[in-house]
Length: 437
Image 1 (cartoon, rainbow, N blue to C red):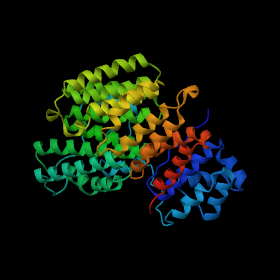
Image 2: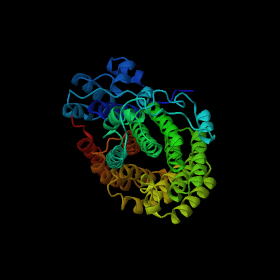
Image 3: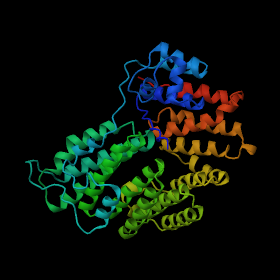
Image 4: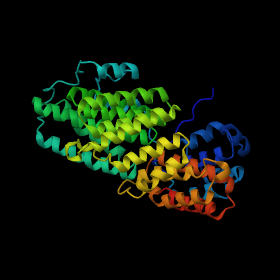
């Protein structure tokens, strides 16, 4: 069985160039070795350029253009890049150890992790009094303020925009606080905000294709949420993990995580959290080819959301509105091959994106793809129009998921390259997505 292709991070100019090289290589149906044979380079070198482990030089970009018949797309991108672009960030599970170096759940596989989460035992995270630092309510306020700011940045601009700032804050401020001195009340609040920040680091890592790091941050977040006794936050973390499993094609894990999230959310008494967890369960069932189960889960999500009162919900789940549920329903329909379902929900989602540019990119790419589900009735021009409308938002979003969604549609449009609107897609992509050094 061929090895699953690694998803690419797209935070730097070199990474975006590598993603564009992969796009054209896949479009032409070539392996890395086959492309290397055409350009007199090794397949290994091409793989390193795609992953931004090596920088391409101008002559190499020109050879790629010639071999892939891109019309000069790669040379144009290379010329507009800053050659001082940073190297790709590493995907390492060890980075989460800066927060919890002795995390008792740090090495657990998923089944064992879920067993520990369901058990009545609380993990020992840290002992107060390890350092002289005294943690008080002012520290908690600052941490929540930072969390709110970085969450807003993630939802609007993607995980890559502020991931480094968050991991630095976790290492320099949150980790020392966890090993400081505090009373029981402050300890509960500290573990809750630390869990939320670790969960956000996991989500940002997932959004930038650092899947190992994401899972490690999620494990730390779950351990902290368990220590804080916060089931609503634990359910939210489990739902995030279900989304990662869905994205990486791990169907059984996606279902198990989402089911655990739903059960935990119900016990927490948070209807909005239950609604989101049920929506992720619907996506998992759709991916597994069970549209009936997906429909039941979506119905439950709608019912729960109808009973939610945002002012009574935790701050981190208030984003889950009827518009966000419609977005989840779009993705469920797409996984079920239901083009009409995608198009039914799209106006509500795209008309209410607000400050969530990443959602606009993902939803627009899903909608564009829906116009090409049936080759006999494909509306190529409409698919192109939808993608063109989304490209201005995409230019500001630092998200591997977002770029991958756009490139998937571009490859489906490529056989129709003679159409004016398809040519316009490629022109505007080059203008919008060329990275800034």
